[in-house]
Image (cartoon, rainbow, N blue to C red; front, side, top):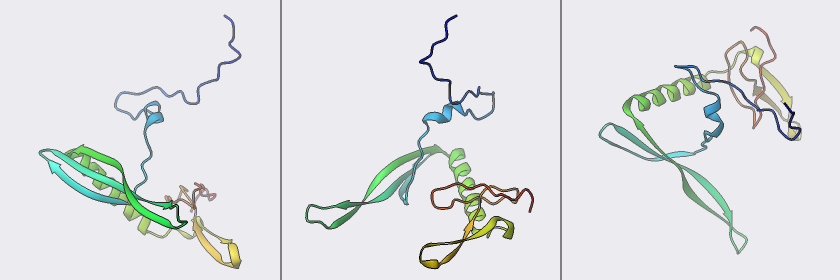
Length: 142
């Protein structure tokens, strides 16, 4: 057998397990950012939600215009809607709790201001994002 020097190794090799969640199947799943659930409704047994996000656009006369665009149309059965509702309620409850002291740090910011920033996914169970960076908690135990 001849090795192919041009071939790249796969990034992820995780086989699906019956009843589990496939990591391979998530490779093409979209990340959806939205700012508003602007419209919703239902058909018999199907919940419908339209998600929108705002845009800012430069205009020819050097001003800034704003508008909103539809970024996704969600369709789900009633069980899926209940599952999504539960997940959102739990995430909001997590977000409303201040992190333990061991998972906070201070950083000197621009103009000399000190900001307390949440650290993420430590053994203390906190989870948050700092700007666009995911930073794991450095404490092994709180």
